[in-house]
Length: 416
View 1: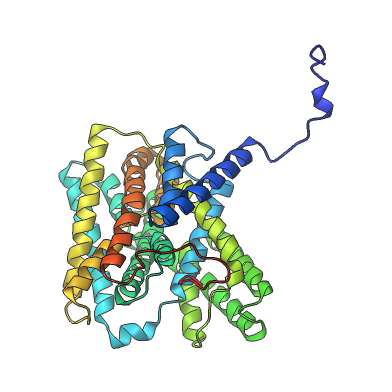
View 2: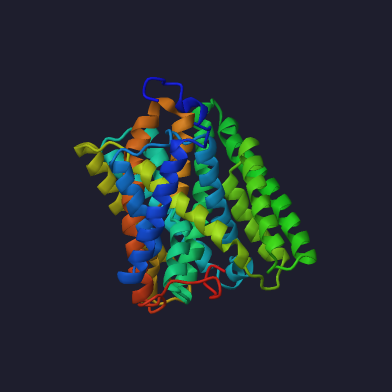
């Protein structure tokens, strides 16, 4: 056998490859660590997922190319789209009519975050072509991380609801402006109209795909039971199709899913539950998403200058969001103590920020290294630190369970 190298050739069969094996084992370890963190340290499982991905990235595990493309990009967009569709389905526009200060609060914290990060980086002599994308990336809080924290801590209350709404709205702004700015970087314009056109294209395509997704979901809910397994498969397949179509036509797949969920909430006023049968598939995609984000972000190279820029970005972002939430808190019906916990709960930054960073890296190759060099370490830091701060904020607000237990399919969760 050792003398004939072709002996084993007749037995070896093609498989999915060792990359698939690596990811399978990585997800198995992530699920175990996430469970142990929640079970024994009473921390959200997402922290374990991110920690495993971070360690894998530091050890050199690099099964994905940067900027993200192909299956890795699609899976990340699909995972984000599923979570954002659910988040959009929890936003009632009538709330803003009865309490418009919530919308003011959202606009204030997003605008202040952009301005604070931009001018802080410019003060550090970061070029405007790098500071502008980083400010847009920093604008987005992470409803993806927050949703998992809420689910794992079983948090319910005004601080939880306010933080989720503000995080979702900031994501809406960042996806719209970030996707449009990436197109402007790819095709430098000479007139104001050419600068505005990418914004209109991103919004137009995303709204059109969102409307089609909403109408299809609306028809399905009229004819199918929300608790049916077939309804779950139908919804997941539609979101996947919308993800492909929106990205192919020049829109934003996560933005289309978010707007689709919001539209569905307005057309389908009756309370509807996220199909419980979708829980396992959604949880697997969510776990893969967090591991992918942290693995990719951990591969960024560090230096003294980058560390200073990252710390400055993180501090400026946290202060700006706190001031914005505080200014908009006047007349919003929430106490100042609640405003503090809301601002802390909006600390996380994760998959949405990574998607926007990847868009800039693809559209502006000459500035890609400078943008990703600061954005990726900031995303990694705020994914880990943000999950901890959000958990502590919800518990200090008295809305998160101090001793949350792992949920089973028979137990309803906040995300169901």
